[in-house]
Image (spheres, rainbow, N blue to C red):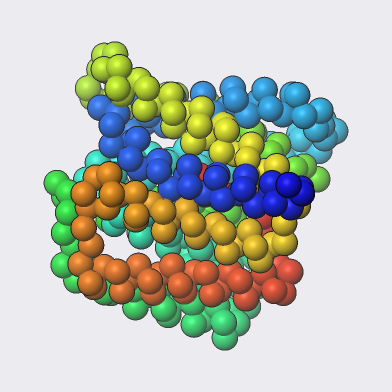
Length: 299
């Protein structure tokens, strides 16, 4: 098996792993901030070990220069995960995923203001398609204890993730793995006091199933999947990576149907197709012009 084939397998495996994160989040009877704190700590340890073994090093001056922007993006990433896990609590994994994947559309829409990039005809089509998709879905939300609240948390997570993407574009001179490792450190520092202050249910030890699920999210979904992602994208064309990234939300919809028994109405499928299709269309067109950033990924 050649190197490119191995890279494809690593990338697809990472996307399938990320597509299953909602299944495991549903198994953890803890507050979202506590789950994210565990994920950040476990994922940071795994990625830190991989980074140390890889021998990949940037100069201290380069790392120091990026601390302010990566502190902000790390904090945004931590609260992005909290919002996403809150969405899982209040509505279905499928609706949470659809809302969350509005993030690329948010980036396209605000890029003229933050990145001085003009909205091209292709981007406009993608944005309009996603807006039409949202209208299809939000007419009558169904599923979960409070689907409207859950969907709003999913949209909040999308906005926060879009801010992570925009902030990361300001980082320079360091690798994607270093960016993510610094973000995890920053997220842990910010989320720890927030988890303590906002805690309302105590710090009781969850059942073994919850502990196992948290370990999987921290070690597998964060540390291991990030290793697979970063070790694959350097060997694949940017357009391929952008296309494969949509295995993540599509697999999340399939997994939620197979393992959680979630069902989507026809209008929800239409909305999902418009949102994901619009985001993919805009990303691929942007990638053809050599502008897509592949240093970070929604995980």
